Amino acid sequence: MIRPMRLAPAGAGAPLTLWRYIFRVSSARQALLGALALGASLLSLAPLELQRRMVDDAILPGDADLLWRLAALYAAAMLGVALLKFVLKTAQGWLAESVVLRARRNLLGIDRARGAQGGGGEAVSVLGAELDKLGGFIGGAPSHAVANLTVLAGVLGYMLYAKPELAWISLMLLLPNLLVAPLVQRRLNALTHTQLTTLRGFGEAVTDGAGVAVTDRATAALYGNRMMFHFWKNILKSLLGLLTTAAPLAALTVGGLLVLRGESTAGTIVAFLSGFQRIAGPMKDLIAFYRDQAQASVRYDLVRTWM
Image (cartoon, rainbow, N blue to C red; front, top):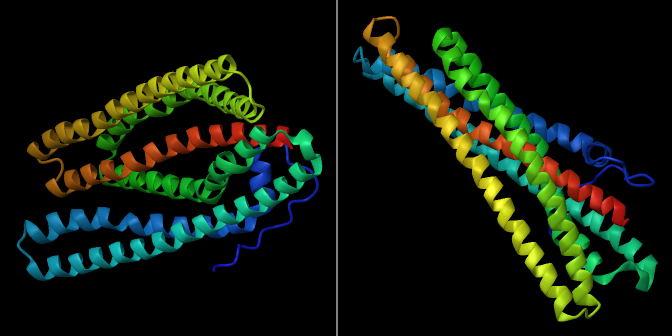
């Protein structure tokens, strides 16, 4: 069995914020994961220029030898990215489970010290799903955000280098994503807090053998809260999806006009469209990171309060 990852001492008392806790117990490990994520992201940018060169320098001029060389470089880059991502994902999972193991053992000690006053249903909720989700965020989210920011900055930088005017038009269509997400996320955060506190109360009611009326009210409240959460979450996804698809349309339309006028090349447009595909994922993941860290902060505050 793989031994748990060695973490920094937790120290006395729980830090006031989630990020202080992450820094206290895993700052060195997070730096290593960030370096792996940075390397994988930088290497994943190589195909953008390789695609442009394959179209403009090899396929259109009919240079088969150059095409094979570029294809070999493309394949090597893809293999390198796959290997780095495998190591990164494995290390993220290792860190997440190590954090959960330590926190679970510490919290079990606190719960046992309380004895009968600890609250069985609340303890099960804290020691179970809440810790698993919190540990998953600590293990993977920070380094994943580094990777997404690197890809986003790299692709946008390449676009500005290749065709600045087209890049600025497309960037203006992508920026609304960053404005819409925080507005909807505030509502989702409030719903998450309500859900977690209601779940704890429901667990306590079941453990204490509360009457049917009490548990029915709790289950109805949980259902209504989750339906509202799905409603707002789907609004956010739909808006972001619409805004994200507008940028490639602009690139294809404006870029196509530039090609027809002889002011750009087909390879540049291909690289731009590929770049937008690469941007869509990181942007969606960064918005998900913003959402997940907000929800993880809510969970951490509730766990810290329970302690």
